[in-house]
Image (tube, rainbow, N blue to C red; front, side, top):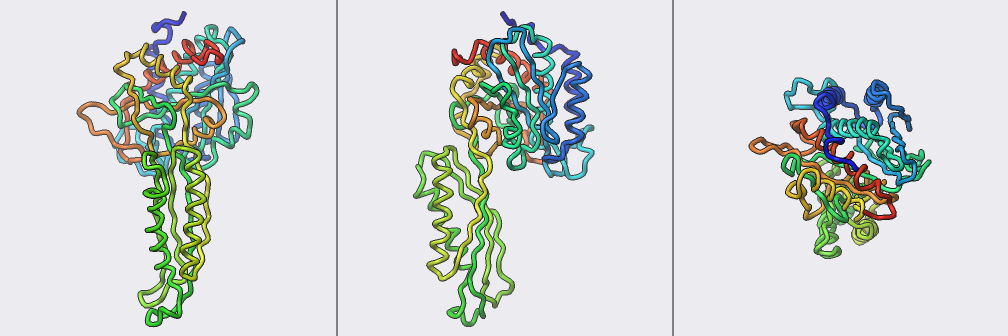
Length: 399
């Protein structure tokens, strides 16, 4: 039987994890450029005498094989990349890399998973099965999770269930945000190239105005949210960039629109894509022009599986009290490529609150985003306890 004292993070380990977090924060690297980050993670593991495996150019994972080899194979994932943001926190360990910052808490995620590796390795005789701890590069870019999957990170042996967390400045410090079903949205990008016919503004009837076509398309795209989608299901269709025209007295022959769509179900995601393409092409054609839509499938929604989510929820309540567990009422329309794992393996993705009472909490991707480091051992204990006390029962029990 695992008791709280066995999984408690010692003061010595906590100080080491704070040291790790500050190093990672001070030396952030962009997606797929995490060479030093990967090397640092490897050095920490070597210092602890824990074997690891490299995967891809900047990925790394650790397999912790339990004393009882019969049991489920559980994956835990942390993202390790940073963002192209100039830090403005004023921390003594602020980013030393100009224009690059851990503004999404990935330094915290990586540190928490390293602490979890340390604890699980120490308690490996109590594990049934295997735990694969994955340090994933490139979460802020496209296709990173899929690359690791293609390289076999969910195989040999196959993974039965996965966990991931995200620091969350919208919840009080130390609370755990749980959501059954969709917790984040998909994120797909599109570019619409509108072709018209140039001419003089004094003779508009001899031209085809790409700007007029683009304005009609922008207005019409709103109907995909208001009239073509389930009104109780969140959907986003957003145009974030417009480029067209050369002079005030010339009819523009080309306009380029760039935008994004978000959905929380696979059905709506697929429907949005086809409707958007058809709508743009039809409107442009009705004005005598042409619309070429380039649609890029990005991250799928993160859909939490019931039994894995229940395991985290029960463990969080037992560890920290039920008052610390928050049922999130709605999904975030942000995205995370953990959804790519969750499409294949029953998974859960939960929030770990970082907002301190009386202190302004800056949002993710903000140049002043920061978190109190006392959150680190909380994340470590929750991961460790969930694996040992809930998921080690065996996947067949479905918790």
